[in-house]
Structure formats: structure tokens, C-alpha cells
Image (cartoon, rainbow, N blue to C red; front, top):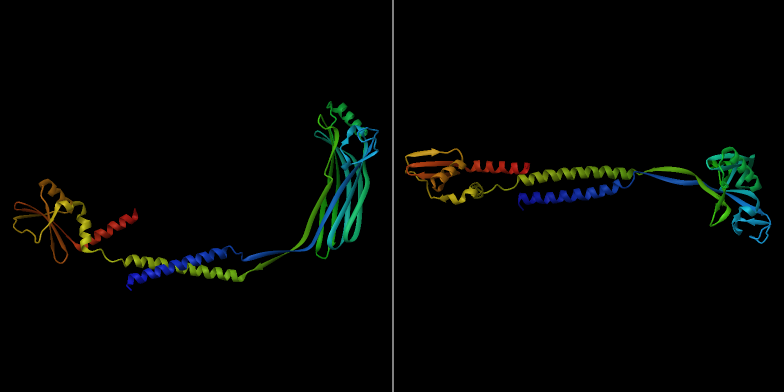
Length: 357
């Protein structure tokens, strides 16, 4: 195996080693050194539910029924005498807790951009110990459409703005505090019930009720950070292997380039005279029967003389490394000589210029 073949084998080895180490390094960089694990210590959920029951005036729409639940049909405003609103709340956790719960209820009416509080249910406090907590309030508010219509009339008198459409917002503000062995919960829950008076040709005059059910879940969590030392160590090892293999690849590639066998003397000469090959004839020995010898500085100058005199360029070789180019014009000889070392240096310069480009 030649030295150049050995270097080629080394290049292949370092190339494969570099690629393999980079692939493994990429995989390790995708693996976190620190891993965050979250454990639930206490899970809970709670729910607030509104319910509405309408008391009806004598009517034919509902066959003279006196009361109507929401699921039984739309609430037509003209046959509604009043709407009773109730609210229930339920909290459930997976371990016992000491609860302190505060709540109050507010009712607002909104007409366009105007908003006014019309009722307030005073704050109540509930204390309890256990996994679950619940409370219910029946008839927390009674909505009287006639009283609201009177309020609309007063609003129209004050503003000149006439409308039969308004919206009631009933908000139960609940402050929840629960102390458990896993930690403390402090949250505010504000479920809102919307009762909107609407009028349209397709539906008639109705009360549109939204926001009947509201729910929320939560956890008290413990976060654990796990440090994977083996991942960090493997990263550092692959950093070193990748850097070393890349350095070895660069050095071996440089050695491979430098070990390239020199260009043969014949090839150098062919490259040198290539563009002017048709002008040159080869002679066994140099013509000496001349009286005047003119040495030209460059081969291109000699080519110009050959073109002007319409004479061939005669090539002869003088051992060990002299190349002689001459033109015979009578007793005058035009002569250009160049050595093989000069040709080799010229070839190297040309290659460097090509690489720069």
C-alpha cells in the first residue's frame, strides 16, 4: 500500500468518525440535561350553577301553565310575571381541607353603554372541614319585568333614548380559601348569569338566558428537577471526539493534497506549449550555424516573432532540464529557453490562482 493510499484510508476513517460523532451529538443535544417532573399533590374542581323558574301570566302559549322551567321552552316576555333565580355551588377535592368561603351577589342592568347596579345580596361566610363543600341559595333574586319596564321608561325620559332591549347581569363573587396538607388555595370565582331582553320578527319578544353553568379545575403541584449527569458527560465526550476527528480530517486532507505526485515533465511541456502547438516542430539537436543569436524574454515574444516572420518554432531538449525554443531566419536565431523547475513553478502558481478564483 502506497503512502498516498494510506492517507486516503485515514481520510475515510476520520470522515466516518466525524459524521458518526456529529449524529450522536445531535441526538444528545435533543436530550435535556435537566428534566422537570410535576407531581399533583392535591386535585380539585368546583362548579357554580344557576337555575331560573318563570311564573307566568294567563296565556295560551303554554296552555295556561303557571310556571315554566328553562328546558320547557322560550321565555316570552309578555307572558312572564317574574323570574326566580337560584344558585348552587359545589367544591370537591381529593383530600380533606379547612375551607373559608365568602360570597356575595350583585345584579346590574345594562342599556346600551349605560350600566347600573339594581340589587345586592350581602356577603355571607361559610366555614367547613372536609373533602367537599357545597351550598345552595333559592330565589336569590326575583326579576320583575314590569318593574324593569318602569326603569326603562325613566331612562327614556332622562336620555331621550327609547328602547325595550336591555340585559341583566347577575354575578356571584366567591372567594375560596382552602388549607390542605399539600398547601393553600386562594381563588376568586365569579360566575355570571346573563338575562337579555330581545325582540325580533323571527323570535318575538323573549328573554335570552346565558351562563347557567360555570366550572373550574386546579391542582397543587410539586415540581422536581432531575439533573442527568450522564447526558452532560456524554456531550463533553462527543464534543472532544468531534473536534479531534475534525482536526484529524483537516490534517489528513492537507497531507493528501501535499502528497500528490508531481506532474511529469512531458505534461508540463504540453501545458506550456498547448496554445501554440501548431507553430512548433521538434528537432533532434539545436541549429548552431548562425552568426547572430537574439534571446527573447518570454515565450509569447517568440511567438510574435514566428507570426511576423512566418517561421516555425523549433524545439530541442538539452539534458538535464533545459527546453530550447528557437526561430531560424537566415543567419539570425531568435531563442527562448526555460528549465523544467521554472515550468513546475509556473504550474503551481497557476493552480493557486485558480483556487483563489
